Image (cartoon, rainbow, N blue to C red; front, top):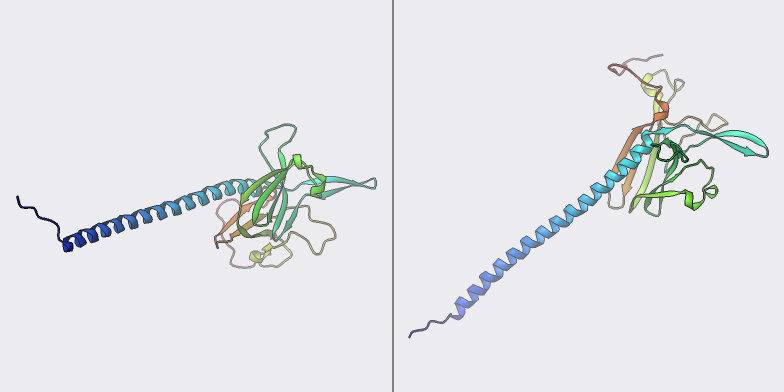
Length: 228
């Protein structure tokens, strides 16, 4: 009976074809794995942004002016609970009433510490965190690997210019340089910009609740001339 064996050339061709098919399958599997990893990263980033957006929107949109009494040397005075700087915000805002003892106002600071973006809540006003016990603080970690945090505050003044458009402007700090006392009002709107170490950047712009008296009803048309 005649038996035919593979020649050395045929064996090389078969091994080569097998290696090419294996290489193609491996490349395809690697691409699928990389795509899945990128999809997972993007999904996690999206979920993180959703959680951040809910927290930031709740704080900025519901921000209100709040005055609280401070007694020093037997003298009582009222201080505004707001510290608004270029990279830091401390403010009061309305919160759904979950506990009657806690009330419906929260006091929060948004701060960046060692790459961690945090929102620290408490149910009572304070001048310094030394006045608040650790068990009365609620720390919410908004994001990690954050490079910078920037705030801008919208202001409006009829004394700045006769040009209506120039009466609205942005501040990097919520202070009145000409006044001796701290401002008791809050910004018309707050813009918060977060930049991550990988170059990503997101911006939140929200109008505050505490200045809703500046409203326009009907269709708004940008003035083309000066409005006294």
